[in-house]
Image 1 (cartoon, rainbow, N blue to C red):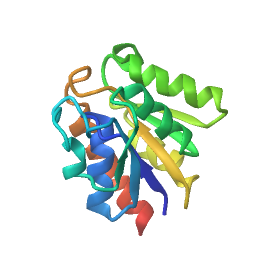
Image 2 (image 1 turned 120 degrees about the vertical axis):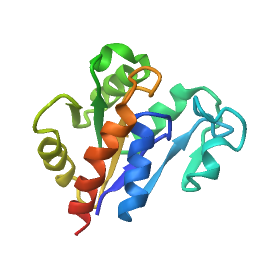
Image 3 (image 1 turned 180 degrees about the horizontal axis):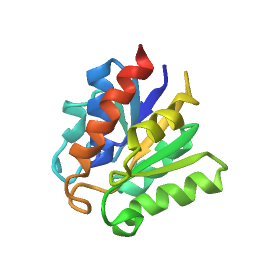
Length: 160
């Protein structure tokens, strides 16, 4: 079984954690100091919902992004209508993963075969940590619900 790595920000990150918990998939990851997310700005923030996350020394989300990519064997990115263009942080994650030579999968919620593509990408990392990322919900409204609808059945199938 793979381990989902996520920083817990709204959007794809949060969908990954929710899908992992719902399917019994292990999860881990880094969040900014104080557990900051755009909808949980006061400490302990995300740590109340996701106790397996650890705080970075910095409150800046860039460190969280870098450390989650660093600690994973691959990166899968979920995007909505605006693609990567809507999120500087998501583009940063992709660039960093590529600079480290890690496999990167970018899947759009608009793709008709998104579940198949997601399952194929994730199944090749059995027993390994995979970072799940994407724009924040405020940058790509509906991404969290859409990514959860894809990830939950895929993770359930991979766990069985």
